[in-house]
Image (tube, rainbow, N blue to C red; front, side, top):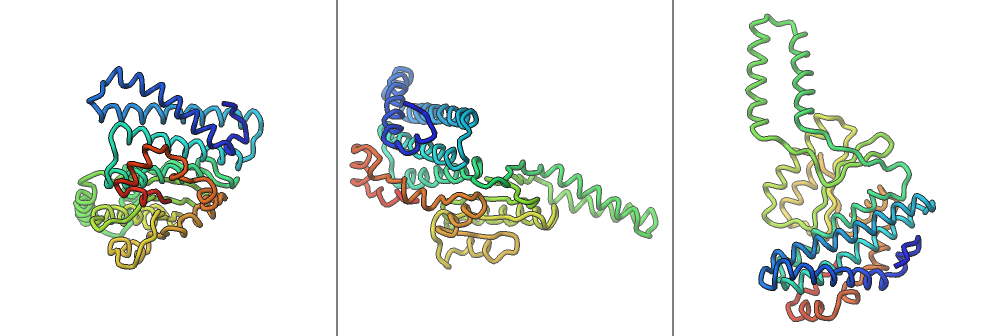
Length: 308
């Protein structure tokens, strides 16, 4: 396969190449795990396809630097390699361990997030900068130091200051009974402003725990770290007004929530790439999946989940 800046226009070539590579790997995997251990075979072939896709991504990045590809050419190729690898992973997972509706609906959602994040890993805009999220331990230490310095400068007796600090430490002991993970799915900076993004394939009726965590994390970003932090929730599916937990986040003052087409519009705004148009032009699950997989999906009413 000739990897060049126009490779993304050759979807069938990429699919054929990845299928051949997957077939080679699958033959070796069966020798190792046998026919019965379908879960181990599924994990192994999934890893083999991901590794091959990563190799292609590495070659694309290397050649893009050497040959001065445009940002859009790089991203077009990365997206096409990613999508084609998904097609092959779905085919071989279904061959090894046939999908039922819950596993397949979840899998389609899981694949969507890293696909979208490609737009920020290889942004079309020049001013998008990926950043590392802060550690909660660092935030805690900084805030504790600020409070202690403030208390030290209050006109109180030493006994009163010590008592106030004692109460302050008791409150912290409640807040930090468990470490708080501030890392979300994506963190980037534009023009000195930090954006913290969480991707959700859909919002279910049992999202209470996740909703509470999201509110806590966003509150730390917005109210403790600085007002220079924006928290964005990108939801794949269109959501109605009856989704209680999603409405809580929408009405909060710490999250900006976008669903369905709004999400794709926001991704374009921040990354500079029209991912909605790319999906419409290139993602054709029912055309690109092999016939055995499609037959299983049609017989088990799974085709309806093939939608981004």
